Image (tube, one colour):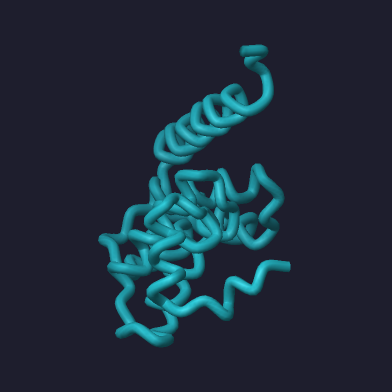
Length: 134
């Protein structure tokens, strides 16, 4: 286990800026908790987003919750569903109940569109790492 928790916020930010998804996730948590930095949900979302776009499952799940609650962002059920669907597809069981709650608040076409976007994202990210021989 890396001693990432022992990193100062400055060192963590440096790693996060270099594209380290785990450091980006931890930056989001710092701003979420207001730990060593001012509590700031807008900043937290930005860091979670960067980690989630790299496939970091906990960040995807957290983004789903933030978009559903409108925490640091405007509430967006479709984005909440999209990120929660990605997290669930990669084994995050917490997202399952969130998806059920979101489905109850969305139209069938909204759910279908969000699912389709998630499928496209998963395919494009899996192809780049697994199925292409070059």
